[in-house]
Length: 393
Image 1 (tube, one colour):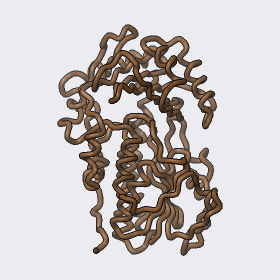
Image 2: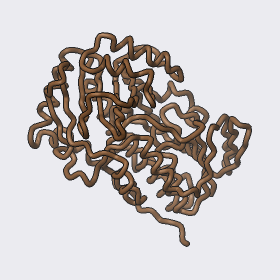
Image 3: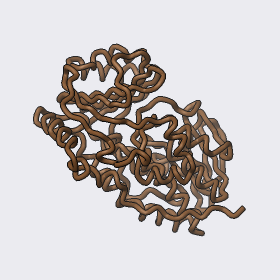
Image 4: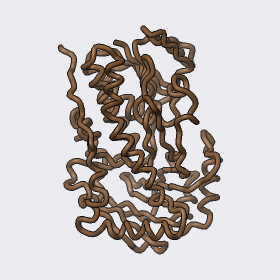
């Protein structure tokens, strides 16, 4: 079977890896002219970690990632007001790692070892599903006739728009924009400690990375249109909303235009009644994006990709595989989305009361047993991964 996957981020290459193990032919199509860099750190654990383990990439994840020792909330003078130790929530460090999203994507793609065709600087413009095959028209003018098409092209999925309808039907904006950018030579540095500072309307996070690079992560309340594909407008939004911010935010904004990488997007969820139609399916954020606030989108994308590939390997009919894929994962993903929808007060408090509540909860999370009672369940994914039947040699 020939499967064309749109998107070479996290979900797409993961799906490609497992489809190749099942003996299928795979083509990856990526809109960017090269595989992406930048983005933000993702905390990687749970069932997604199990998928990575089966792919044999955990040692490389640990080599290129970070094991953070503390998330430290500070006041405007930089003094600690609360501290959370990851080990108190997730236990021993062997089963989680923080890693740049672009590094995770790179590691997954390299695991394909060139076995999948990669088309870059191109994307789909039309999909025609005649019931037996799907004719794919690409922006470059190429056409491909394939057995299945899978959209792994993220929150703003082109495949979803073409096959299921406009974004407005499925996207739920949570009233927050997210920006992540990397700067060199920033001071101060705090190795393996995430510093968090919040005021009403925003949170700023600073994380020291290797090679004297610092990641700045801003989550900001914003009502109204979110600028897309316009970095100048995005920077202006951040500068305007954070003009009176304290702590290190002015220093971060001063370095913004010189950032070596820059990411900006809305914190939104994708909620759909079905992730498949005919011979077309969606995975990752394109299907059920839980939003940045969930903190587990990359790991969940790998779970979705693995599950879809496993069901396709087990079922003779793609329609049965598609049905089993969604049935197996809907409870998990809806629970993650519901949990994330209530986390806005942690990432960008709306009021002084919410800010006080955020800081109080963070203080309590530093107490023995409280962190596990409050959040431990969310770090244990309630899903059973299906067995995978690889192709016979």
